Image: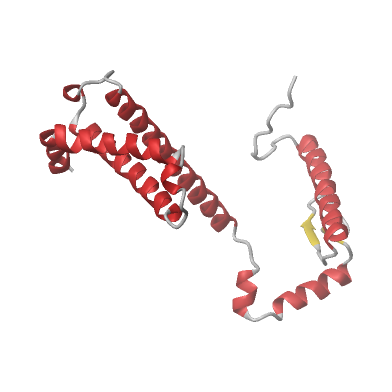
Length: 199
């Protein structure tokens, strides 16, 4: 059975809260020490310990080293200091923006794939033009023209080679894509114009 996810919220029971504090504090100290050793960097951790009757704070690696490190930080220029300061809200916002960008990218890729499938259905005769909406017709035309630009760019790159016209993969792809654009532009002009007006 998998490990249950812990809800991040205040622990009401005192004994359980104490045990959790001790365990997680030790984990933080351990990870900080490992980071310092593995990457050869100076670090300090200061924790306000409400269960420590004598001092109230616990410091790693030592109070003196923590003071030296903090003095060095406070002595930095404001611009450099702010660049090295991590704001939890900013980090969260960056993660949200990154996730939104990735989601948008996936949605666009899925939409383009759907249009590719629809285009092939149309060319294979599985879908008649009167079954395709103006928006779908506009999408098919966009995909076909995009494919054509890719092939044309490929041919331009190969044009300096004597055998580019004999290329076994580019030419059939070019021919197929050109036929799609011709079908959409010449045989279904009214449909495409309707799609573009609707844009």
